[in-house]
Image (cartoon, rainbow, N blue to C red; front, side, top):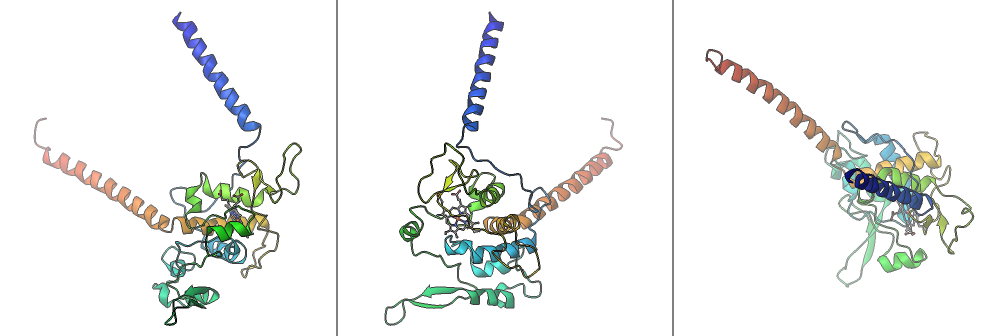
Length: 269
Ligand code: HEC
């Protein structure tokens, strides 16, 4: 009796698994690529050159639709950041950060007349948003909202792989049987296969100053590295601290064992 109950529940469990598998294979589930990044694992750090190139990709493509409003321009020069300069540990005084700030225009005000005005950005300013508000963003994007990048890599499951896949998986034609709504693009990495964002990357879209070939895959890898840093700027510090604590605890344990042996040396126990 017991055995048959067990068999029955095993059969039930197996059929549930099979059904779930079939459901995910029949469409709707996102298909991700297994891209490897330098910042993964216990020892991983951000590839600074990739993050710098990624900033360029963000600037020249993504920033026309996506904001990154939690990040200040000066953060780019913080320790562990893509443009950290040992000679100028204070990013407010770094010539690179000042030059980057000059690339941005921000709205400030109101002035003494009560009017808002535009000025070139300073290191303390946050990245300016391309749209005044969510409604304006949706109106320009066929109703879809381009999410803010500040913490997007951490906010999505398998963030780096997901965003890399999304950027490299666009297909011109939807497979047969997929009914595309107007203004939508087919992308199997997006849940449901249809996304409101047009393909943002094309080969040679940017020209890298370090001579790296700007293929779609390369730009996707670089911009994800940059976005990962923005989502978790203290990662390197945290990992370093973790290792220091482990080493400290190891030495402490050795010392405790040594003193235990010394204290009880002449005692029968
Ligand atoms: C022309 C405007 C436009 C540009 C340029 C653009 N995006 Fe988007 N993006 C959108 C819109 C609109 C959505 C929302 C799509 C939807 O919900 O269907 C979106 C969604 C996304 C998402 C999906 C977020 C989620 O909710 O899972 C990611 C990731 C993303 N964009 C990354 C990028 C990157 C990286 C770049 C630059 C290489 C970029 N986008 C450039 C308009 C844009």
